[in-house]
Length: 178
Image (cartoon, rainbow, N blue to C red):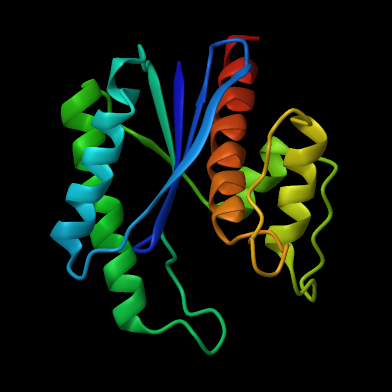
């Protein structure tokens, strides 16, 4: 099984695939705690309560944290917090599964998972376009919509990113076996 994670400080997308690339689980955990360690505990509790640790995970793929400033909402503090959370979750994965995670740049993961996906630099809603590709690949998924607005919730994009990084890892594993 392959575990794919999209880690942030507010929500973590989680995908699990079997070795042939079939999606086994797509989920998320919303982190509500105030501090990093409280959020870490929420993730660990979620994984244990949902028994994700019982899957025979053989590979772990994680979308790497932001490394550069992007737009007006990214600052050094945000990048540092994302890196801290990524490190904490990565260590949990290493200790739990005794596997070192493989990290993927978001653009590399998208290009590898969906080679025909074109995301122009000026594309305003890249996450929506990625989500649409996941919907196309996995039409059986029941996505989450807001009860108030009937709009997609933000967590769908975290799950889509976790799916994308897992699928990219599978594609790279398949190439290396050829």
